[in-house]
Every structure is written in C-alpha cells, then in structure tokens.
Amino acid sequence: QVHLVESGGGLVQPGGSLRISCAVSGDMFRAYAISWFRQAPGKGREFVAGINRSGSVTYYSDSVKGRFTISRDNAKNMGYLQMSSLKPEDTAVYYCAAARAPGIVDKPTQLPDWGQGTQVTVSA
Image (cartoon, rainbow, N blue to C red):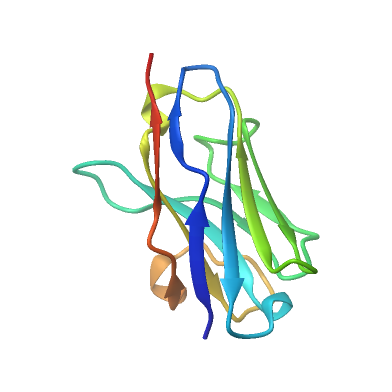
C-alpha cells in the first residue's frame, strides 16, 4: 500500500500549460504502475494517462493524446503529468492512483491507492 499526494493544480488560460505532481510514499515505488484520472463536476471519473512501473511504456486517452505527457522519477518517488494546449473541457479534479502491477492499469477498480486530488481549472 502507498500514500499519494497530488500538487501543482491551479487556474490556467486556454492554450496554456501546467504540470501536476504526485508524491508517493509507503512502499517500493518502482513496483507500482501509476495512473492519472480526472473528474469534472457532474461526470464520472475518467482515465487520462498511465505509465508502467519502469517508465518504459505510457498510454493516453484519446482526449489528451498529443497534449499531455505522463512521466515518473523512481529515484524521487514522484509521478508527473505535463499538460499542454489546455482546453476548458480539461477542467476537473485530477487524481493520481497506484497499483502494484507491472503494466498500465486504466480501470479505477483495479487501483487500490488514490490521492486526494488537485483542481485544474482552464478558463480565460
């Protein structure tokens, strides 16, 4: 089991960029796949991006592909989501989640550990 804390959210203008971070503690970080989800008001939790435990494989939802980049630093126990060309429809609470698994996990029910979320608002 790991403890996750997101940070770096905020208000950004359309077309802007933002990087959010996920600090992970409690177990061997490199044994965990990391995923990012988001939830907009009145909507369900949506998979955004995932990265395997070594960082060699990444996967993105169609809605963010080409604009967002997921990464991790296993030496620092950190996960990141770099967001560019942001749109108002990207506004949501962003969550990082972890699963002790080798590959990418994109289903919320398969991710036992979650952070508290960080708000990202894209607005002029």
